[in-house]
Length: 180
Image 1 (cartoon, rainbow, N blue to C red):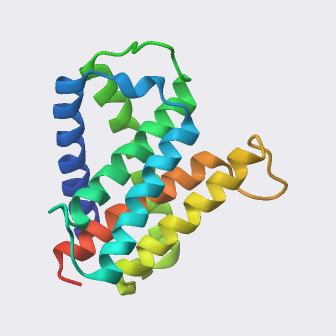
Image 2: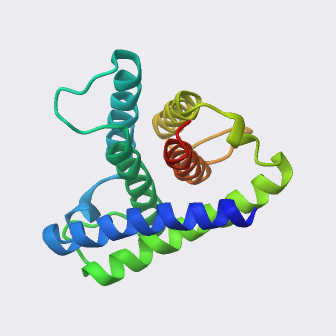
């Protein structure tokens, strides 16, 4: 488990580093996005990864890894939006936004530790393509819940889906690093 935590933290550090740089360059304009807009952004990135996996080439020069970083950051941003609410004009500075995103990534890490304990690191036996398919499935579930105005009968909520997406994308990045 120590190896997993070290690898997980390295991925999160990379993602947060990019997030902080973009927050410096662009500000926090993303604070105006409604959660379904972020869901759609994540869906586009996951669908692009699936297309790259099936076609085997990229015509725009970016591969799977940058898309996974985007998925992790967008999912954490969606969790921030769920907690802080959507605003009409950006209301956070770059440092506060990075703090908020880091806190949501820590939530995902805590969840990963609990699930990893129960599942015995089963994700290490999974293919990156399967992790991407799970991300797409979670997104379709989230979209359905969003279309149902957040109402579920027995299912976990949207926030649980975004936390799982963060973890699946981190696992996929670790798998890519290990050459699987």
